[in-house]
Each structure stands twice: as C-alpha cells, then as structure tokens.
Image (cartoon, rainbow, N blue to C red; front, top):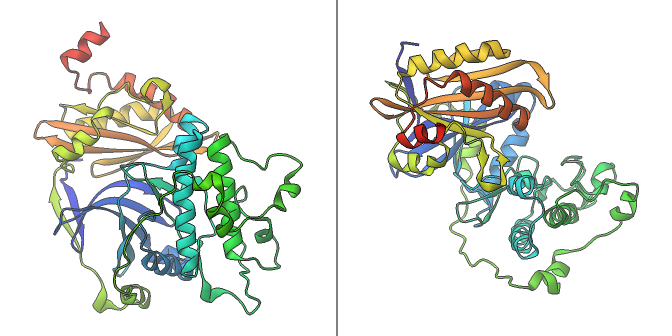
Length: 411
C-alpha cells in the first residue's frame, strides 16, 4: 500500500469517489476542471454492454436523456467514449432518493405528496408531448435536489415514439412489477402514455399511504381503473397550490456525440489520464457538506433513529495504517478484503437477508496529517451493515481521532 494513488481524469473531468454501482455501470463523482462544476460520471464497460446485447438499450437511454431538458429531469450534459469505456456526464443530484423519505419517515403529509405528484405529472406530460415514455417510473427513480425538488432519473427502459408499431402500441414488456400497468404484462401491446400514468398513480398511493396498493386478491379490480393527464390537470385535489414550471428550451439537441460513441470511431475517443498523488484531497466545501457524518456513532439520522447507508470518521493515522487496521478488523468478521490504492471492498462470504453484504471504504486527505474515512453499504441489507459497522468501530477505537468534546461524552 506504499504506492501513491493514481488520480484519474477523463477529458476535462477530474474523477473522484464512487457514488453508485449497478450491473452494467458505475457512477462516480467528478468535477469539470474548466468550470469547477460537480457532475455525476456514469461509466459503462463496452465489453459488458456488447456481451449482454445492451448497446441499443443504452444508446436509447442516452438519446432520450439528451432530448429531455426539463427542470425536474436529471440533465445529461454530454457523452464520451474511449476504446473500452462509455462515459455519460450527468447532473449531480444531492438530495437522495424520494424512496428513502418513505422508508425513513413512512407516508407523507398530503400537501407534501401533492407537490411531488404535481412535479411528476408535469415531467410525464412534457415527456409524452415529445414522444418519450419512461416505462419504469417508481420511487427509486425519483431523486431530490438540494432544495427538495423532484428529479426524474433512469430512462434506461424508455421508448421513443418511433418504436411504436403499426398498431400504434408498444410491445416491449418492461418495468417494475409493483408499478407496471397490467396491459404491459401481456403481449397485446400497450399505450406508453397510460402505462406511465398507471405508475404515477401507484407512486401517489405509496406517497400517501406508505405501502403498495396491490398486495391483496382484489388486484384485478384495481387494474381496471384508468385516468389521463388532462383529467388529472383539472382535478380539484391536484390543482390546489399547483404552479407549472416556467422555462425555456434551448437550441435543437445535437446527437452527434452519441452516434460517435456507438460507432466507436477512434478519432472521437476521449483522453483518459492518470496522475500520481496521495489519497484523494477533499476541499473545505466538500468537508462541510459531510460534517454530520464525521463521527463513529453517527449511523443514525436525527431523533428518528433511522439507519443510514454510510458513515464517516476522521483519523490522524497515516492512510496505510488505517487500511491495515480495517483489513485486520474485517477478516475475523467473515469478510473478504479487496484493496485498490486507498479504496477497499469488504465482502461477506455468507449471504444475508438481501444477498452478500458488500461494504466500500475510501480514504480522503483533508489535511497533510488528517484523513477522513468513508464507510458505505454498496450492496446488501442496511440493518446488517449497521451491525457490521458497530463491530468494526470497536476494533478501530485507537484509529479514530477524538476531539475533547468526544472524550467528555465517553466519560
């Protein structure tokens, strides 16, 4: 672990920590070196994409997101390609998932649920007017920005109107079972507009009730109910406090970069650079934004005692020593340890309630003699992560930097 960390750059973007992982993609925090703007960099492996025959679906996702420019939709800035990777540059959304609010707080107040539903319906109406259907609307795909406004993400299952067959219907079965419209489940074709509206209705139910509507034998009766956007827009409950967003669409969208990436033209390949440095440096702004988590005991959020999916602590120990201590503590707990530079992946060899618990750690340099260690659940059950971390923290007691206030609290 004595080798210095390699700092990665993709084109004009400086790449930082991992903020999300999926089957075909990894999402990293990045910063535009020209403007300083934070972005989310979605990185796809070309070999995996081709192996699983996902190229057309991913190309469709990219094209769709470039066409949609709405204040309540996660913005796609540009797409780049190298010999082995596809890089999608997205708006960095900081408020987490709408789903987390439901998990942590249960059902919402009516006024709050209505505000999110109004924003969702406005987005869906905008997309449909441009021939775009989402087809996988669910709380997990609804993010929140720093101001608590809705940001719809993941158009990976969307369909452009050009894909409608001669009968005027879509024929691809997709979506998430609890939210999907019943006609999508058969092969008779379905209308993308009403299918999305069905999902919106289920989402509204979940926001207001805190649980899914289709958990009993009456599901077929519920399948028969339908509504259209014009009917929603004139509904008295919906109209209460509704203010549609006012925004201007800019010039026509250029899709040349998307075509270049999937044609795999070497002349358009973006340059990936690696520069040696110490553990990733964290500036004051980033540190302040994370300050609530600089505490070993802070696995709960506020007075509600809700389980968190990540936590952080600070240490005055050298980075190599911190890594050694974490490895030393994790192995007796039944975890395989995978190390790469100043990041670690801890994987439980035994499957839990939601598969094998995976924990990701990364060390950041706050000052020459001060490091911040982030520990987050990458996969598995949040409660199991909490139990693991309580055990881990006991072993790391001599590594964690304690302030005088912390020392007083432990007495």
